[in-house]
Length: 110
Image (cartoon, rainbow, N blue to C red; front, side):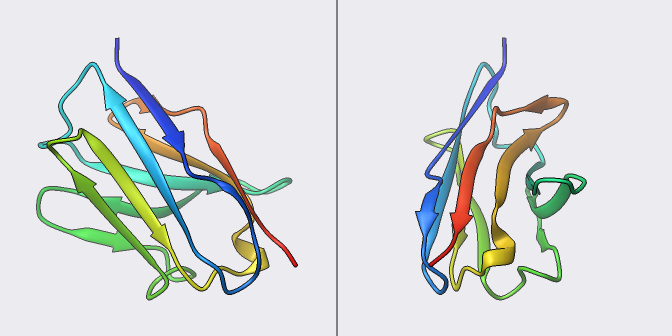
């Protein structure tokens, strides 16, 4: 059974930073393509960032502010989020193959 567990969300002021983690069990991530998605209330789920063995990609709205990475030894993917804006407020989900995590809430507000 593959499980993805996100952590690291919370309340942060505009301009602040958070680092999300996605710990994976039941499968090795080293050869897998993975991604972070987010969904704000009333909006569709959208791709934030993706990572494969060869490359990373980012949504235009987060490029230059967010950084996706992973530690294969820890079987964990990360999303470093800097210069956060209120419009980054959403539930953030990690995704691998056909599996989703349960999500972690990020709220950017003063």
